[in-house]
Image 1 (spheres, helix red, strand yellow):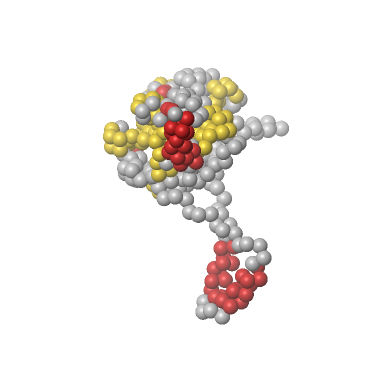
Image 2 (image 1 turned 90 degrees about the horizontal axis):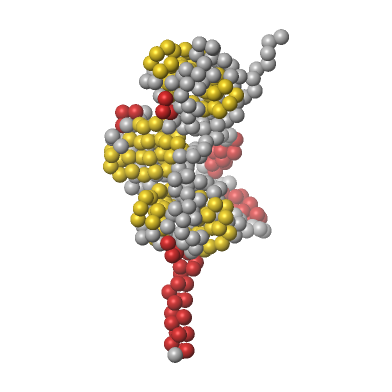
Length: 372
């Protein structure tokens, strides 16, 4: 009897040995990020108990950090993680293809099963640094190549690459900010160029008292919803909108005074309350900045069936739909995603940007000094 029990124990170890290497569990400090596995965390911002997962399917009993405990996760390029609300891969789902410090208020601590799958090529191998003591051999090989045809041209190109300096990032000031109180105080909301009806005014209806407008932008406040009623235009910082226009704003338009595109060219910078979609992977190619709202095919400036990557700041969620009219297959994102996946690349025809949690609003710049 004892021999049979021992044989059974050894057999179980042989079966589970491969899984032990894949399901590495411990604290966040004990499990460093890796390029070949996703990591689930029990707390936000990649903290608390953690579990590394290679591509595979993980039901509730395989979640070493426990069911209903996932709050954040790391997803390296080329992998995709789908969280399921219930065991057996059932219930609501949410898909992630990039590091996500917060899974969202509506999905925190409800995950009971997980699927990790590869959706893109694995990351390139890391550069192998030369071993110590090999400098003399490299110099000898370099001297031998000096006699090769075209060696001087190659050296010139190397010098050009060494002199290369990346372009500075585009300016981040092209965002208007509304304030609930005068003198740029109280709750605030940053607005990139776009149209904002009452449902998109997060500081509330009939609440605007002051606003900051950077050079090049114009803000039009409307008295009623749907951009109706009286209006007032502003093209500079305004500490008080006026007694006759205080706390009456129900819709807003932010636009360029110089005819620049609302998507800020090919390299927009995502402010606090807007996502950015890109036609190519790795946040490149034609792009469009989108504040919270619903966008059908005709409103996608980069074109339908062209989206490959997107940036989603904390507090927002972007849902991509396969067909216009918000129909067909869908995929949700709550973090920056350099690749939407082979099965969802270049098929988006409508999308929704919505608020799911607290968002960071840049602090207002200091008020200009009073004139003498």
